Structure formats: C-alpha cells, structure tokens
Length: 237
Length: 237
Image (cartoon, rainbow over all chains, first blue to last red; front, side, top):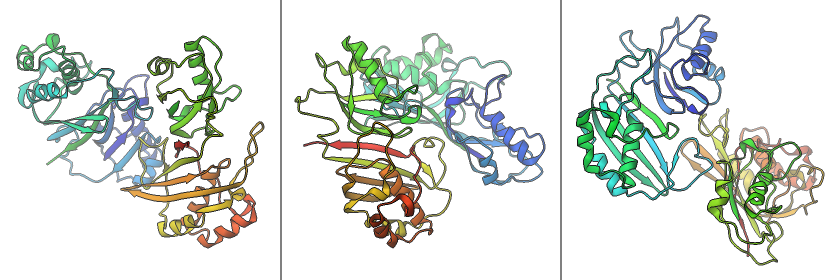
C-alpha cells in the first residue's frame, strides 16, 4: 500500500513504546478489519515530525482489505492512497530501488505551512547553496552525514548514490529535492543543515568533499529540523 | 494591519469568554509591546475554525509597533503581514467596501488539507452547481442565507451585492470564490451548503430565486462546515 501522512502528531513511522506511531496506528486498523493481528513493514522509517506523500508498506493477510473501509478506521492525518496484491518476494524496504525526499524552505512565515516548512530567518545565498549541493551528487560514503541509528535499527551500508539534488524556487518557497538509491539515518536533514551553513556563508561550499572524506559528523553542519521533510515516493522494479 | 491566521485552534476572530480568540491573542501581544491596554477592531468576525489570509484590523496606539517584534510575541498560527498608520477616520469594519472569501472543496482526502478543505464524499455535478451559483449574483435580500447572529452582534442590513461567485477547478480541488460589498452571518457557508445540495441533485438550481424571495432559512440548504472557509481580502477606498 502507498500511504500519505501528516507526521506532526506522531513519534515517527516505526512503533515506539508509549508514543503513537504511523505503523501502530495502521496495524491497529488493519487488525480490526482483518480480524487477526497484522504487522506492516515500511519502506522508510521516517522520524518524528517527518511527513509522507508516498510511503510504501507491505503486510501478509488472508485477503486484500477494502481501501474505503481501511481509511474509515484511520484518523484523518493518515490516508491510504492505494492498496494492491504483490508477489510474496516483494519487500517494501529491501525491494526499494530509489527514494525521493523533498525538504521545504520558506522565505516568509506562513501560518498554514508552519508544520511543513522551515521558515528562514536570514537571507540565503542560493548560488552558494547550489555550488555546495553539486558536491553531493554521485556515489559517496555518506558517514559524515549520518547520525547513529537507535537501538534495534539495522546498520546501513554507508555508500549511497545520490542521483539528484535539485533546488526548485516557487515564489517565496524553496524546495530541495533528493533522489538516491537509499538514505542513511538523518542523511537528508544533515545535508540540508550543512547546505544552510554554506548558504548563510558560515561554511565554504568547497569544503564538502573534505567533509565527505573525513567520515565523521564533526565537520558537517547541524541536523535540520524534521517537520519540513517529506518522503515523496519509493521506486521498485 | 493585515493578518493571516490558521483558525483551527481558535473560537473565532472575536473575543469569547473562556475560549482563545484571534482578537484577544493579538490584543495581548500588542498590550505587552506598547505597555498599555490595546483593543483591536477587525473587518470581519470570522467564526470558529475559519481562516484568514487577509483579515484587516485597526487600533489606536501611541506609536506604530514593529512588525518583527509583534510577530515574535504571537503564536505561529497567527502572523501579522503588514502594519501601517491610517487616518483617524479609518475603521476596519465600516470603511470596508468589498470582501473576498474562498471556500475549498476536495475530491480526494488529503491529510495536509484536512483542516482547510471539505472532502467531498460523493460525486458532484459541477454544471448544476454553476447554474445555481449564477442566481446569487447581483443585489438581493440574503436573509434566507443568514443565521441569526449571537448576542452582542450588530444587526446587519440584509441587502447585499454579490459581485462574483466563481468556481475554480485545480486538479482534484475546487475553490468557490465570493466577492461582495458585505456578508451576513454565515452567509458564505449557507450558500455553499445550498449549492452542494444543488450539485448532488437534491435541490433544483432554479429554486434559488424562490428561496431568496422567501426570506427564510426554511428552504435553503444546511450550513457548510467552517474549516474550508478563508477570508482572503478586504478592500478599502
């Protein structure tokens, strides 16, 4: 199934003790509908506050539930967009070939985008940002842009290929579009945090290759906040 | 000043006992900033859950407060967009010549628009809706489309001129745009509720002139919900 959600009220996609997660909310609805305990596996473990327009998850069930009935059991901040049968070899996470994330920046505060966009308090040099962004393209060891994952998270191979990092300007909004064969824990937010340091003049764009080579968080910028980040889509064969 | 707000968390623009309103929230910030008790008067008393992109309010103060400082004292769901000095004859409500409201409909549920758009559960006949909408244009007594205002609200003259009622389709979203010299209490929501009855086939579009002539809520459709309604702008001389 493909899923859209406003992550504002959730502790992230993955089940957490004592906090509502997207996963447990959907599992509860599916279990009521199918009258047996259902577990789902998501393509991406989006963090607390991160949103999705095209998360993918799979599960094993006696039959395909009706989309309409499933949405009726879910809160309005989680919507199942499509649901379909897949071969037993399909795995939402391991079969994924490519993922796309967007990160939203705003030049002016907007009360309707406060939970989905980062309001920039300073003027940014977008040419510096573009110069910096170009250094991330291609295949790199992204260890310098990855936080240590929490307990129970599988270790991810640190070498990833970033196919696309585009800066799209629309009026007073800026969107950073990331497309890669995979992302490390907090990788997008760490790249954005570093590019914002570059754009405000605190870091030279040309130090990025050196930061990548260091394989350490030490030289990279801070982790940008989660609420402007959207998982847009997951591609499969 | 012009004001944008997400009305989701508020009991409406106007001060209410025991509930947070847009007005009291702004008055509190202004009073802190200007070190004296400030009262503001808004152009439009938007209801609980109704939003604004261009509400206008005026107040009397010893000097013009800084926009930046005022926004720093306000919650992120209320933003002052502009602030300027006006002649003492200016009155946000009485000097208003024209107001524009938008009402947002959506053909598919969207978790990011759940507080700002009405999700249509049935298919609508938009041609019927357009036929019905045309009957509202011009100068009419809109009593049939007005709820009785609450205690303390001034009685409004029931004859209004509707300059524009446009239906704009954008992908799976529909926007109804209203422009008039003034609106009665819940008038937009009552017109929308009636047009939705027309669009789903429950009411003939050609009964609208009769409903207007009746000067009674009896024949009109129900009041549509407040959360898809936006005060877009208020025009002055």
